[in-house]
Image 1 (cartoon, helix red, strand yellow):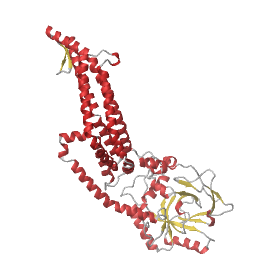
Image 2 (image 1 turned 135 degrees about the horizontal axis):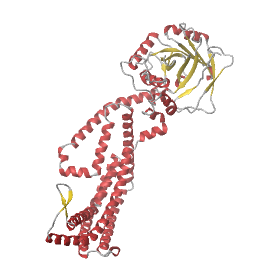
Image 3 (image 1 turned 90 degrees about the vertical axis):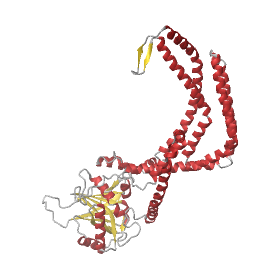
Image 4 (image 1 turned 60 degrees about the horizontal axis):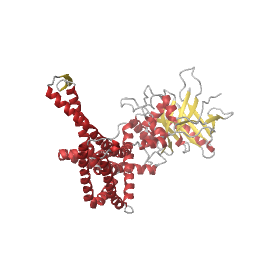
Length: 571
């Protein structure tokens, strides 16, 4: 029989003790989870294992002994370790030993009961596999958690050899937390035992985050209730709130904060990843906002911006006046209707005059307005950018009015021409049937319709030219606002946490639905076997097999399992 022993790399250099883990009979595998050190009381060890089995539904037991001979090997220690098999009976009993120098390993499997099958081989063959316990646990490559009605240690039928190891390590997390803060009566070595101080700080932060999140969630609920008040749903306030980008961004940020400080636990890895990406996005947004705030309030840059804003507005107004005067003449040599051209030109010039007066009236307060707008950057760069978009919309409000006037006038003429064209052809639009039907008109109707059609047709080029010019100006403003909104959306939806994991810890992203389809897929794609370590059989060695470890020139450390021992037979 070929027995596979999965041993954690964090326990390679620990002191001697007992091997605590799970035996998987379906795959003839022993998954070592921790090493139990001396001294200990057997009844306390059995109580601990019973608690772990009850909490994790994993058949955790003492699988064998671990001997790490730092000096000359002692025969008394070996006999003592062999005698522990009577205290913790397990079939089969695994004995691992690492001798001095760290290059010699010995593996032995003993059976206390005689094999019932006479055709079975007399001695077992051993394959020793090392795995990184921390990365296997964090990669979330294990199958879904078993149902409570499953028996302890039961493995789903679809679980393969490696998937069974993933499932064992993931469901035995309670064992790793047993001595995170104090050693207690039983001392274990595993991936958490080397970071006790850091674990204490992380646990204190986790414990304190509960009341803080509850308090902030209550405050956010109060703010949401105030925002949902009927007063803010009245027509003027609701209309203004739907048009301002700042209000939309504040509502979006309120949803993000509600998700972050929610006390509900994430149900799956997708929700956890979404919450982590939201936290990273908010932190990045606030950091960029504080950087912008410190830049604006340094060296009186706000005063310089306020002083430069009024001359820029005057320059834009002068350029618009020159443009309108050009349109009132003969633009590009086109023959325009002079009367309509003069009326439209003077109408738009009057709007520019009103806008210049409005800017000069607000000029004493521009610096204070910019100062308070700069303070909004402490809420995040996206809030400041949304305010900038709203300020651009207010400063270019006259261009928006020009566009609306030109569009309305142009649409009225187009609709009038289409209706008169149907009259000219003896047709009409049937409102009830929503179609064009034939109609008979008298002579007066045809004469007046033809006259109005001719007048609108000859006035159309002048209206179309104004509409085209102001549409291009409006598109320029919309393009600037679109770039600002694109940057805001990029910051809001940037999966910064996922990108960081992809670059630094890609094994954390391997727990997706595509990564846990098959056990072979888990092994090849997620674990990424990039290097192997081979163990050469020591010449003349008898059972137990003596193995000398030599690092391969091609391989190195990798995120998942490292096969350290090949099949060793007794031949």
